[in-house]
Image 1 (cartoon, protein in one colour):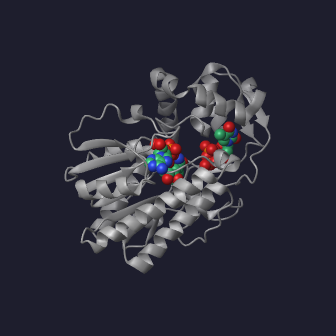
Image 2: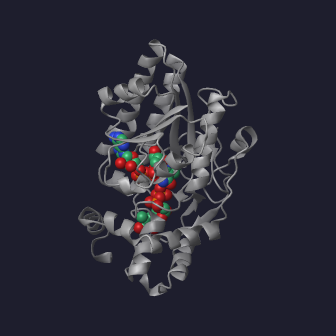
Image 3: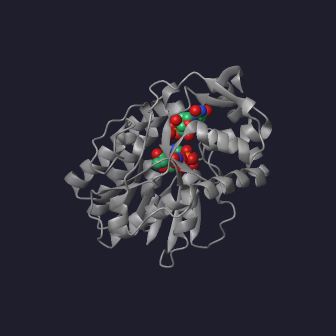
Length: 346
Ligand code: NAD
Ligand code: TYD
């Protein structure tokens, strides 16, 4: 297997790169990352494996992508590169359309071109539970058969890219699987997302901005479990346990309200409840996500292994112990985002 990981300097991508290198018959792992605001070389700086190589560039650079396919004889793409933050997509959807849709289009057309030349490339397209929309309290979790109903611009661009992938399977007979996962947490997550934002603010004595009533629910999964799932899906596709065009959901049966998470983080950081500030709700805020993952269990033998309380405590610990990482990414640009998003609140 000669693997191209897109977005390997991001949160999940950096764990995928590490875990892919643990598979003995992986010959090569190329990490193509544009190093946007959420991509950090530090996330992979300690990888010394000679099979690993980082390339600074964008999936939107078609000629670069094809050069990598050819010179590295790529046989699998783990496609994670994306604009990934809902709040940013509400402010401006353009970069989401460019990377999540147009970037995926370029990957797909390049795969078709190489297939015609006799080089088959399997694609694992990494997507999200948000494409299914929002659940009511009494609804069962999403399954792979749930209709797509994206309700925010980020989710809409992910759903569009999922449908493009499926159309290329049907029309051009490429080999591809779509994985959809619930909210990830763990080390290396950029602190614009709930858990790292609250952790850093709690540690610094800053305010903790809870949107709306704080009772929205997400199904939290540790990033290492998700990354394992992506690699299981890759092996499943290559070894024929999964057919091309299939969708696989990953989740953790771990539905938690946002406010409960914030309170746990306050406890883990010895912060104070008075730091909680209820702020204006996110427009169109999805109330509840929950993922059914019976298919992954049955076909891939995959299930989440990291227990939530322990996983969260270790994650908070990681942020406490990695102040150099935190300082390197909470630069001027990050401060600007906080001011722009939260105003005087934090
Ligand atoms: P992230 O924002 O931390 O990382 C995204 C990475 O992609 C960054 O390293 C960035 O530099 C890179 N990138 C952006 N545009 C690029 C381009 N044009 N070319 C090359 N690289 C580019 O995101 P994440 O949380 O690690 O998410 C990774 C993937 O997993 C995304 O596709 C996301 O939709 C999906 N996902 C995330 C979650 C979650 O909870 N974070 C859950 C389910 C699915
Ligand atoms: P987030 O980490 O942005 O992930 P997603 O929107 O993809 O689920 O947000 C998780 C939940 O936390 C979501 O319900 C929004 C909420 N939230 C806050 O209440 N305050 C915040 O400052 C942020 C960033 C998120």
